[in-house]
Image (cartoon, rainbow over all chains, first blue to last red; front, side, top):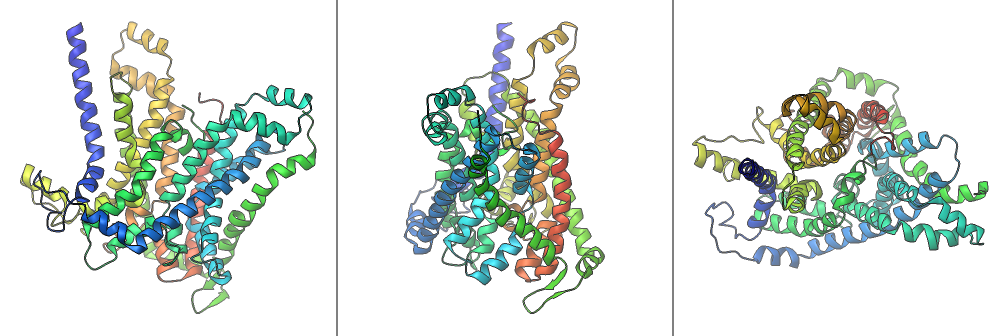
Length: 273
Length: 287
């Protein structure tokens, strides 16, 4: 019996390693290519002299620095605004009697699920005529819109978990609604709020379609910047991979931090782990 | 708790106003634009002309067929592979959380990066794919992304790589909530693992499976990076999906009216899918 168990364990391990390797190959490939010189990129010998030139070149490039900063600014600001506005709606839906609440709430969610091209056309036309094309404000507006339905749904789940009795008790003691929020609701649901904010940041940082359409050279975000590496006549694979990795690293770290909330986030709270 | 109307409005109104202004209004604007001859040089009402032209356009049906192909094959492969891996990860073994972290990376990293890494691996002369085929199996490879026979599979494979982890993690969450007693009882009654899987596991997980499939369908329908970065819809029309077609109409050829018409058709399809999804989306029952 124990022998059978040991064999079974070994088979499980072999399969797990195979699966993980298979899914890791493309990322591994980016990592090693980013350390190769131009002539080594498609040389498949296992050992090569790793160089850091690609990173140095990418990091020294002014446009890359600018795009990276753009992404950071837009992601942080739009996340803060989306959380701020979204919290109000989530709290309202969670605590107040509102007629047709569930219908309204699903309608809000569907705004996030429709194809982005539906809103991209008017945004493009309007932004060009009112001067928001290629601006921080334009990008922030579109990303707040994009994230708001998500924030409303996911935060509501966290606020629902705060016992309403605690809020009532504080109110009986004479607290105003805002004081209750500050001292009871927000502290208790704080980890949930942070997780939601991190997910928002990831979504904005990874977004490509709107950034491609609505920005030019000034406010281009870094995902579009990385894509531009293949725009030139000859692709510098090494630099492209170094840039790809530099763009991915903050997201991988954030992703690992919120991995427990990732699935409930990506399904808008339909599933809770 | 006593609540005043003013208080309710103060909480929810800012968010609702924002969504009406920046989501509902643009959608209506697109609908309005879809009835106009709107391009760089013109902007006038032309009734149903765009719709009639679209439904007469052969490329529309090719794009529709490609979209269907992409969605059906991406989602079914993601489901089958995702389920197999979920069953594997449902076993207990040491180091599971580390394995899961590596496994979920494809769905965390920016989709642009995924597409670029596949662009590199599918490179016909220098890419990893052809190198492996040649050295291990002595098969001369293909020009994956530019050959009409392989291009659509090449872009579908990116979707599968990127989103199988999502399906796995959703199904894994479902597997963990299955009642152990039912499984035990079936085993005592003489059912083998395969019977248990097909007659009990799949049945009990029906709802969670539908959620995973519908979410993936809604998302795959609007796939962009995996195609735009690798083939831009080519070669010819071989990987042109509705979304890519709409993008090209609107932002390469600047035919905003026609693009809006296609966008409205997509909105219609998407809304049907979302309505189906809603049926499976009651928050309480899944836990």
